[in-house]
Structures are given as structure tokens and as C-alpha cells.
Length: 281
Image (cartoon, rainbow, N blue to C red; front, side):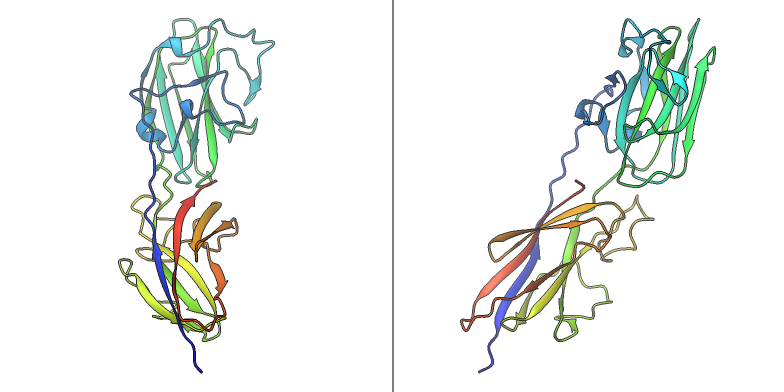
């Protein structure tokens, strides 16, 4: 007897929490490997620009001879801020008027000692950072350090796209044994607003792959509305199938594909698969 089961595949909405501040908080001492959420942002272009009083720097400073050397600079009064890259390019402009000093600004890979760019110094009034090889989805830090003395400064420009983990909006279901999508062609765009009931055979192997809403920001990372979801940074997908949670850790740009063998049963039944969460771990 030919047996069939029904499978409903749907996708859950994600809730993204965005913390914002009236003025950004810098971490005194620079940064450390454990990200401090008080001095962290996924959208530093919106959070960082503005005027900062010299009180954001630590007092007293460190003797330059004993200070940590960053980008070849013995730091004295360093403060730091960590962010997630939303685009490969970044430009930062700061200005200051220090009667007897100046400010150094440094761009670091993560919170390591790897210096990507630096500018400023004693007896200057402005500094700029420009770098074009950031990895989208990876953490970076800027470190500011007062030279000789602390002074007020302004971040006049922080030009970088915000990082966003886009919300997948549909799933494609592909039958491995039939060699085709259960409802449409594997290579064609499907309606992101549609949830479907599909019929599967007991014991049949089905692969599911997310599609996403197009980004207006990270255009170099995504192909368009309803294209397959395959960001270039590590992403964790959490599915729920038949009451069980399944975690797919995707660090090879496979797009969160999951392959499931349907239960082999003589009883007709209905179940569902949901992609309930996507995160950048």
C-alpha cells in the first residue's frame, strides 16, 4: 500500500534586541577578549559620532615607558570600543584641540594586538582611519589614547555599514530521492510569504534550506529578495522538527541546510519543521 505523510514547514520570526545610548561608553584600558557590552555596538556609525569630554580617559595615566605598545605607540590613557563589521570598508575622522598633547587612534583586529591602521599623535588636531579589508560579521576595536595629556575630542565621522543578521523568511524543501523541490524548482525564487503543506513518503530524505529577505545595506553579501541565505560569517541555525530541537552550526557558507529522514511509519500523521532562530555566535 502506498503510504503518505504530511509535513508543514514554516519559519518563525526573530526578535533582535538593539541597545542604544545617548552617548557611547568607552571601556577604560582599551579592550579585552571578553566583549564588554557597555562599549560594544553592531552599528557604531549611529552610536559613536559626537562630542566627548576628556573625563572618558582614565586618570591618572600610565607612564609611557610602562604602557602597552599598540600600533608601535606606547599608550598612556587608552580607551577602547568594540564593534562588529557590517561592510568591508571603514572610515573614521576625529578632531581635538589639545594645548599640550594630542590623540592617537588605532584600529585593531578583534581585541588583539594586530594593528590594522593608526593615525594622530602629539601636537596634532585631527586623525583619520581608513581601511578596506574588514570581514563582515567579525569583531574589531578602535583604541584612542591621549598623548602627554587628556583632552576633549569629537568623533566627526564613522562611516561603516551596520552589521545585521538578516531574518530568513522561507524554507525550500528538496526531495533527495525524487531529485527535485517538492513544490517548485530548486533554482527558482519562491514566494517568501507562502507556507506550504507537502506530502512526503515514510523514510524519505528531505533537505531544507532557508531563503531570506534582501538587505538594503550589506548588498555584497546577499543576492536579492528570496535568494538562498548564505552569509560569509559563521551562523548558527536552530530548527525544531517533530518536537525536537536541531542545531546546525554553519561555518562553511552552506546556508544552514539541514537534511532529515522522515519517520518510517504506517500511520498517516502531520508534523512541522520550523527555523526558530538564527544567530551570529
